[in-house]
Image (cartoon, rainbow, N blue to C red; front, side, top):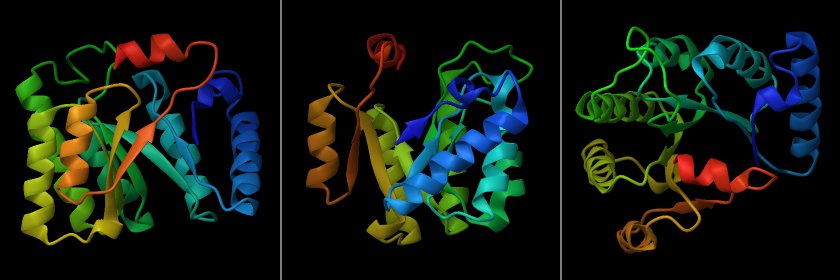
Length: 193
């Protein structure tokens, strides 16, 4: 299950948001389920990572999303390294100023590959979230070159997006999770990606 912390009060009260998220993670743990904390716009990044860091020290059933288009992400990964996080790596979709984000897709793609390799070398589990075939092939190369076992990563794609690419990933022997948005704004969420 993936959650957005703003839906749990992130921008209202950090302590309340942490308590609600902790209860959710605890309940998910009882049910042997996993909670992924989604990343939102850059105004939420620091607080989201702070809550994740606090939860990760006590719970292994929680992961976080990081965005390759943010300039800060490589540093964030370094600061989280000792926790051996469970990540979802995505490119990022929010419109952010150039001083904090990359705008050139070639640079974003290079950073995506760099971050993926760094995470896998660190022993983190990585959800490789992309619909970009170029990045899928780059991920295949990194996985092959580093001899990463299939238990250390999975590909992640949205339901209904590029089913042929999903077939290519599965045919190559990789695990694939299909992400299904749910809720009132599911359609708007899906088409932004």
